[in-house]
Image (cartoon, rainbow, N blue to C red; front, side, top):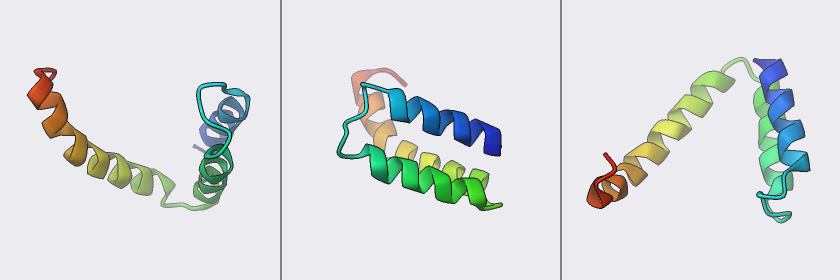
Length: 64
């Protein structure tokens, strides 16, 4: 998992699609997760929370 997080950090650093303003915060959080044993669970919970917020919008658009 740590290798995947490191690859993600490298991708974010070189990405033009992510604004320069938020890159440092995203990279910092990923580095924290890389050091935590519960990183996968934390990411899963955050994605689940995001989906709960976004799913009604997708449903309204007929995408779900």
